[in-house]
Image (cartoon, protein in one colour):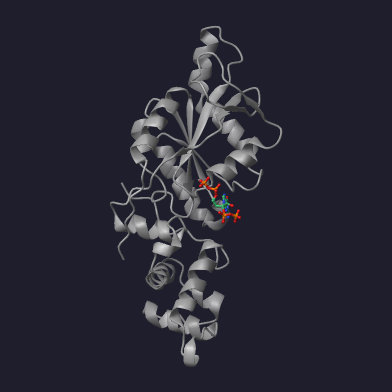
Length: 282
Ligand code: G4P
C-alpha cells in the first residue's frame, strides 16, 4: 500500500513553531500510544533541543498497557519525561502537573538563584493532527483557567492559559506533520485514523490490520468475531464477512463492508487494546 501526503503550509507552520518555542520552557508533545513513533515527527527533537521535554502518550485507553510501559522507558531513555494519559479524562492530571514541575526543575532552580520568584513555567502543546491536542488542552485547562492577554516581552497576539500559579500554556497547539518516508509509518497512521479515510483503500488496510493482529495478538480476532484465525489474511476477512453477514448485491459476500467493520472496531477499541508498534531495539 502506498501512502502519500503533501500538506500545505508546512514551512510556515514550522517557522511559527520555531518562534513560539523561543517563548517557552517546556514542550509537551502528544503522541498516540498505539503507535508512539509513527505518530510523531522527529523534527521536534531538533526544534526543541534546548527545552525541557514531556511526552504524553495519549489514547492510552486504546493501547496495550504493557507496551505503553515499554514506550515510556524508551522516551525516558531519550531524555524526555513520559506519561500515559486519556486526554478526555482528568484522571491523570495531577501526575502531569507534578511531572511538568519536575521536568522544569533546572529552570525553576535557576530562577530561584537569580531571586526570581513565582514566574510560572511556560509550556506549549505540539503534535501531529488528531493525536488529541485540543482535547488535552480543553480537559487540562478546564473551566477554572484564565486566559492572560498580551504581556510585556511576549509576542503580540499570544494567548496564554494560566493553569495555576505554576504553569502557563500557549493556547494554540503547534501542529507537526507526520513523516511519511517509511511506508510502515503511513500504514500505522492510517490504522489509528490519522489519514483521511477517503484517500485510503480500506480493504487493503483491513488485510494489513489482520496481519498485524494475528501476529501480535493471536486470538483477539477469533474472540471478537467468533471465527477461526488462519495465516491467510484474506481467509480471515472472508470469515469475518460471513460471521457479520456482510452481504452485497445478489447476496454475495461484501468484503469491503467487513473491512470497514474491522478497521472501525479496531480504532474505537471495541476489538481490544492494541499497540501496533514496538520501541526500536537500539
Ligand atoms: P488534535 O487537536 O490533535 O487534532 O486532536 P483532537 O483533540 O481533535 O482529538 C482527535 C480525536 O481523538 C477526537 O475524536 C477526540 O475525542 C479523540 N481523543 C482525544 N484524546 C483521546 C483519548 O485519550 N482517548 C480516546 N479514545 N480518544 C481521544 P473525534 O472522533 O474527532 O471526535 P469525538 O469522538 O470526540 O466526537
